[in-house]
Length: 515
Image (cartoon, rainbow, N blue to C red):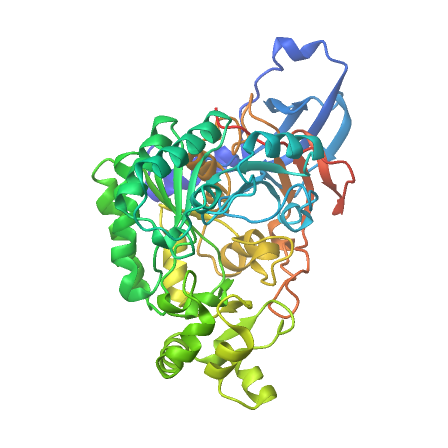
């Protein structure tokens, strides 16, 4: 047979992979089992590797995928799912999430998006408060509804040894911080996160960060960072500072963005910086959430000299005019007062422009007298659509939400659904296999999950089943806590967490440990 073209060959190969899946016989160790735990039949398998989909069935025993292939209709299971007309994919992995698995273990916002594992301890802040082993035991006893991959927060380490504002640390302080990091990595932390734009991470220097990076690398952990400054004119320097640590450990840029940068060309300039460090042999990656507004504390718009350890009341008296001018310029640079949408009481749902009218005074006075640098959190509409989409499409980039159950931003309830609905089905920026890979297998490889992220025999049975055309994101900035619709079945460690679109009461997630 002669092939007329490479395109024709690919069409035939693709059709065969989807419709002509191999038909291996059932492995001998499964033949004697009369009733399996779970059978998923007739699904379109997208296995998380980025490879083309294929038609097959899946057997799950306990918490593990036992078989993928053709299956006789006489075989039975305790739980049987007919996935005809639906995609069967790995459960998604959120590379950068927030939440408290002890206080809010259900995590419905993530499960409703097909997310089965989240990475916590982000931006330099982790919850263990110096008792990582005890915190692990508490999470184990609560048993969250999804899997937790915990990271150690650099800022939390600084707070634990009570030197949050020191720029130059003593050898004794460094030794204490290093010892605690070493201890947490021994207990299974996946690495170290940094919040270099936040207090106390902003006070850390090269010597400190390099010392900690070496420890993380010795355990094959990962460094993640909210870099020192995401403003467009500061981005290169901030990326260079962090990615340079890749000499000692894999480096992953959290929620990669350019504040007030524009265009695809600028996105390519940004990703070329990642390429520069990859060519040095460093392991480099990043994550992006699919929204054009960030969310963080209002302190982000205040100058360094007005935030802790500075006494804000003294700053107001001594440098009022200078502070007013700084805030006017900063807010203008960030698309004006209408681009700041508050997410905390008593201002939740109002923009800074709304407050100007309501309180009848300039926004800079509101920020100084009514709110202050620690008085609110907000969404900031400061990103450019074409730039962020180009970043999403980069091979370095996986998907995150940077969200939580309680945050007043739709990203915690819609990021993964939006990647499918808006950017794959409607926008056609991705193939479905590609976007699933960015939300599962690629993320698992980055953070070091050796038995999750793929639909593969021997891997843990974290599974999402859905019709891509029926995924509907319901959360928006006015109603940020509406659950995504369309993920019919979600399994966590082989057990149903969502069945026919309804949540299951039992919780079957785990606190994961780095191996």
